[in-house]
Amino acid sequence: MRPAGADAVALELAGERHELWLDAAPGAAGAYLLSRAERRAIPVTEGTGGPAHQALLHLRKGLAGQRMVSIDRIPGERALLLVAGPAIVALRLWGPAPCLTLAVDDTARASLGSGPPAWPPPAAAPEREWSSVDAHRIDVAMRDASPARALRAACPGLGPDLARALAEGAVSWSALKARLATPEPTLVLRGPLESLRDADLAAPGAITFLPAPLPGLEGTIVRPASWREAAATFLSLRRRGGLFRARRAAAVEEIRRETRRLRVLQEHLARDLAGLPFADALRRQAEALLASAGSVASASGEVEVPDPYDPDVRLRIGVDPRLGVAANADRIFEKARRLERARRQVEGRRAETADRLRAASAREARVLAARDLDELDAGSAPSAAPPRERAPGGARHYLTARGLSVLVGRGARENHRLTFSVAGPEDLWLHARDVPGAHVILRDPEGRAAAEDVREAAEVAAFFSDARSQAQADVHVARRKHVRAARGGRGRVRIAHSDTLRVAPRDPEGRLRRRL
Image 1: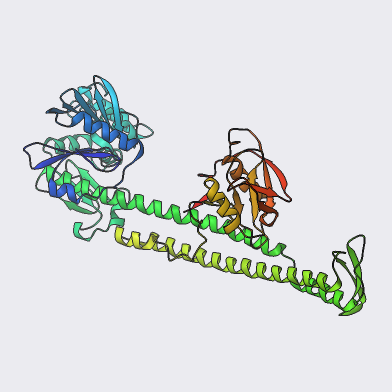
Image 2: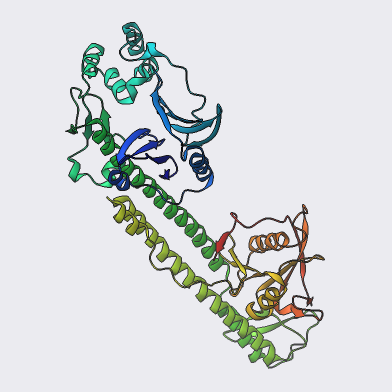
């Protein structure tokens, strides 16, 4: 048995050159006898995991080495039963959610497909076969508010395409019965087979498989030489279109998710930039101090001096009374330089974010314009991203909602290195109070960490500690420059000054973005 994605299997038949393909995908559900070359040409999604993987393991165990006894269609229903020793595979073909179910000892063991299990199977209803159904039931169904649906209920074997043709008046019931009496495999395509691209096949109704030609069919009519050839062609084209459709949808969703994240980051950066004071005002204060040539002694920590650029204006300046005029001016000049660096960094990140937004928009346009899988894969590939900060060593690395890095140590040695070799003096250091836990660093080189960033980092620190099972936990929050190594082994520290934040421990996985 070979898995064929999340909703199909291919069964090797001993002594045969063909394989039996059982499909539970919407629009392609059925049993197909394929040559090995035909089976290899059908595109499938590799790497099936989760429930589908478990179901495939059950199917392999239940069917391997078993002798196939029969394949039966349930009269009056669009359902098949494959009997192989003590195992039965039920395949429900109708509806938007087909299903393939393995049953052993009258108990459903595993299912493939998006619908509910196909076991137990429906009871036989031979009176609903197209050759036996009462014409009066067809007339009643035709007068229903939803005639196509009512026709499928009256005669399930019609399937959606024949029921639609009847409901729309393309063919009468008597004419359809006459055509079904001498069936002929018929494929209806949107264009010549050799000209169809993957995107053409992804559209609803791109390919139709009929048991007989109908009047008024639009498109290219193909009449394969055999039912087996017709079914193999239909399956291959359906699968091509389905794979393209699924990958295109996934690529578009990934790009749009990235676009939403970048727009949020852009808004945060704009607010950060608007909240940064201008360095010119600080420089003016420093120059005013130097020009005053007086003492800065002040019990209140504030002095009032003339503005050197406008003598009629006096400036109130916060000072450290323990320092002289020059030292206080240097301190203000340094603060102005930090603000300028922060402004340049935020402006640079805004420009980078805008570039990435434009690149994401261009990628989405390429994906939507792609016609084949190769073009789709090339169009969805992101352009080279700018270098990004990587977590040192074995540290975990997350991003807050506003894009700041949160580094989490693993073990005492990594905690020590993260705190005293990696973190900068202005970065925030966090640790759950009074319990063992990880050292957490919130990167803040630009001085723009907001309360929500600190809260998210504190929730991470609480989670990676022995307080993770508590409803609330207290967390130390300190600038790294206030943390010193203590005796007693790596990872132990002394904190000169810290605040305490009470938060609920929260697992960052799936909540904060992870950087690897």
